[in-house]
Length: 171
View (cartoon, rainbow, N blue to C red):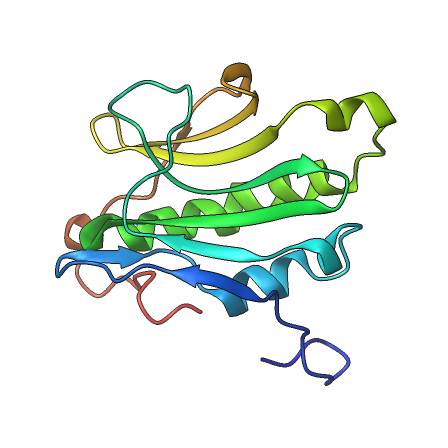
């Protein structure tokens, strides 16, 4: 994937990728994550893992956490992506493109004091399939420290107007 200057975008290395079942999809790809996080302060320290199941986060049980960034130490930064039901993947991707990547990138850019690295920190992107909303949250250890107001997700492609473009085919 080329960036604006025509050079190849440096890829975040994939550490692991679980096999997923039929009916599940990864809403985000390594190339999309690499492109959107390129140039961030910790970019060279990042690795990506793709998980078949949502990662445990201190959010409401009905929420599906589908991506996030975790920091365990000054040199251990990790991006994770969890599989979601295939019908939710386009809306999760759109939510990440419209809101989530800005939230993750801003967090990566913040200066950190030495004591910040004493605890595990995570920023999480989640969707609520019941209310059709996207959630942005931050955790320290197993404690929720920030949950922004929910953001309405775009309607499912099947609910879109006939002839209206869908998110399918986007990156």
